[in-house]
Amino acid sequence: MLFSSLPLLFAATALASPLHQHSSLYKRACATGPDTAADFVNYAGYSDPALNAATPPGYTNTFTNLQASSNADGYGGFITLPSYNVTTCAAQCTSRANCHAFNIFYERTPVAAPSNCTSSATIKCVFWNGAVNTANAKNTGSTQNNFQIVIAGSNGYVASAISPSAGYAMPIYLNNNAVQAPLDCNGKDTYLGFQTFNTSFDASRCAKACSAQAAYAIAHPPSDGSKPKTCQFFNTYVESKNGVAQDQKCVLYSQTWGKSVASNTGYAYGQDVYTMGMSYAYSNATDAGVCVKA
Image 1 (cartoon, helix red, strand yellow):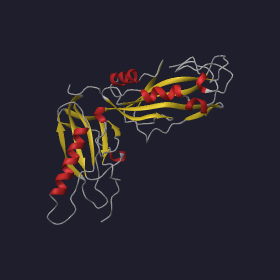
Image 2: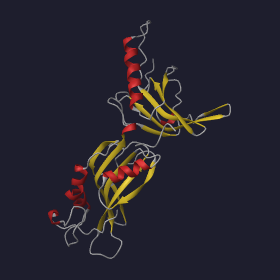
Image 3: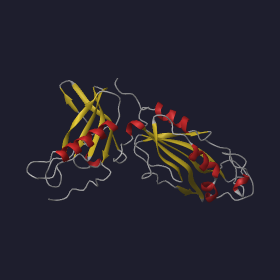
Image 4: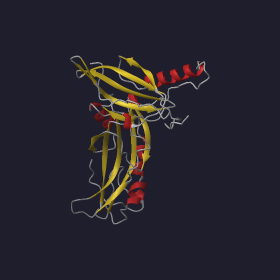
């Protein structure tokens, strides 16, 4: 096969006041001081590990020390960890066939057993198929049974193979569908062709192909004086034949399209069935995807 998968609970206690009285980096000393959501998100014992975490090989850091967790595309479950360990989280993601990003953070959770403490810190490692980024890191917590759940020390990481190149926005995860774009608002086709690669999956080569097409189109404008069609968007995916991965496709377009046009699920040719997987869509960071009526 040409392609392979891309490379916590704490027995914590009530927050002491002031915060420097906390007994260790990860566990909080049970005391009579305040144990509030504000204490939790401002505790240096949770922000320091996030700020000092090294980015694991094969991944790109997309955000650091947020007080919110991600709600990305393609939820892949989560595990809890005994310590804030980005390396362990990354290894777990790499071992999962469809994990291409992860989010690690501290979550304030209630203490279930009888205790003098109100809350504990659960360290979660959440797996995603789609990229995690600041745009989808919007989960700041909730209130359940009068208990306030909050997030601290939240870091996000994306597998390098799907990390966008400079000038391109974070990808949209399309799962097993490929873009099948309609004509634009002027009745024009935005399809610009495709390239095929038979090596390991890497979205950056599609970004280079898109940028190269745009540069060529600008350097060789149409002779009729019309505006050149430049690549602004691409869809890349792994194409499989009868369930066996064959190659990586980079399909180029002159306009950004959304998930609603990702309707191509494959085709049959004779006795063979071709399907798509690991499909991502990328747009030029400056392209809003709005068609202007001529």
